[in-house]
Image (cartoon, rainbow, N blue to C red; front, side, top):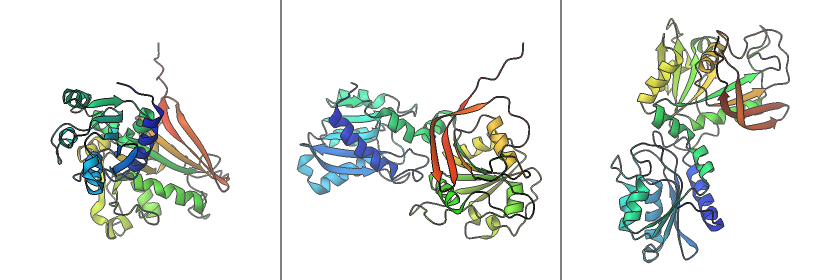
Amino acid sequence: MIANQEPDSRWMNLALDHAKRGVGMTSPNPPVGAVLVSQGKIIGQGYHRKAGQPHAEIEAIKDAQTFNPKLLPGATLFVTLEPCCTQGRTGPCTEAIKACGIKRVVWSAQDPNPSHLGRAQEILSSAGISVTTGVLEADCRELIRPFAKWVTTKMPYVIAKVGQSLDGRITRPLGEGQWLTSEAARAHALRLRSRVDAIIVGAATVRQDNPKLTLRDGAVADKEQPLRVILSRSGDLPETSHVFTDDHQSRTRVFRNLEFPEVLLELGRHGVLNVLVEGGSDVLGQAFRHRCVDEVHWYIAPLLCGAGLISLGGLPMAESVSLDHVKIMPIGDNVCISGHTVYAKTLVQS
């Protein structure tokens, strides 16, 4: 059954707020939130915190059992994603739902995992539990975009971050310093690292900028340092670089002579759901040429360089890329343009 009742949306909004707390923390699982309601009041709530730990539904049930277990039978569960129905690191949530007497389950979107897709509705309905789906579905699908891509293609979701001048340069003329964008814009961009499992840069970026590629200020508590992935042809990298000598050196990986999609597949095999491409020019160009980028955050400074590296290097792209779900955010005198990529159909030569 598909519902459009306003009360359902109210409770699901709360479940989505909980789910957002797990963004960047749950790989290779999706972020999910849940709220239990009885007699028009919340009796339990929770979210999935980390792979291997209880799912959102179980967190909400445990919360309700602590609050008042007598209210659980007959309650309604609101969860942002179709409950799982198979044994993994944790037990199937459908069985836990049946066991505690919940009489109605409402979820936003079906689980894109082929092992779960659509099965929960059949299992719960057969047990006499009312099921409603599609409440705030678009909001949930937005939240699980990285998981949906990974679980269906085995390739991570790719976010490209670029800081450039008005004339499309990502480096300044020699002797002018390293930064183009403002300190506020750089601080805003740094927060993207808390969403991802890996940060990708090219060898030239390591040689020239010696970046740390760490979470630093504003990091989410308990967030593991993302893998620092270096793409190189020669493998000739300074051994004294931060990424090889700091406290997170075990989180650094070097890939030699691999095309960008090959790198993604290798990372995907190790449970990496999403990556942030921070440069340089050739790596960004390769990611777009292979149609691998799913989301962009483009920071533009009020500066004309006249020289330096262009944003997208290497061979020309075979097609244009537009954005939807576009957001334009002024950050002081800088601007951030973000959105989801939409690749044009490649023209077929007759």
